[in-house]
Length: 269
Image (cartoon, rainbow, N blue to C red):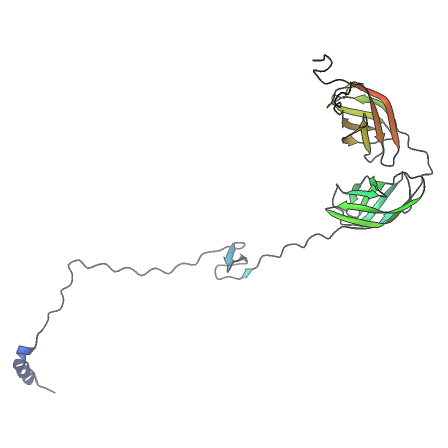
């Protein structure tokens, strides 16, 4: 180990070849250092919140992140398709009530035909549709074709026999206007109430001047409809009225009431 005196002598001999640089002075205004970013706090989540993970939406079961997540419940299964399995009674006499039996009946606007004839339907339960058998002159067996909830079903065969009872007694007593006043004179487009008996519980059809009109309300004693417009060139005057029950019982009158001309025709203003 060199003594200090020897080290000083060596430095004196090497002085021409040694350059000593002073340390770089500190800047007068040093740049502040950027502080380290604080760690991100966890996002608090509550029970029932939803998070999206890898494109899948989850619902938080409990606690904070990380927490147990439960996937959303699967969608409910589609409702079962309706079925038409039979009738009660079968056979049934024309004009008599009977029921269509099946499952998953939910469509109150369901329609049905039998042997090419329309059947009026009333939804009474998820397993029952009520109807009335059409009138026949001899026994006929044919399937019922039911359209419900967008599904067309061809059911088993239904036998309808001729009615053994008297024909239904359809009678018209009077007519009322929209103010419920008795009247025998109506204008095209005016509401008309047809009062009587024996119309039946299920809606049939109504024609005025041999033109079928919409039925707005129907009961065994009253029908509400609208007087149709006169055809081009058709003169105002007595109107024919035809009422047909669902079991084909009918009422006809050639002079039921009078239809007025619309304003501006035949001098009316």
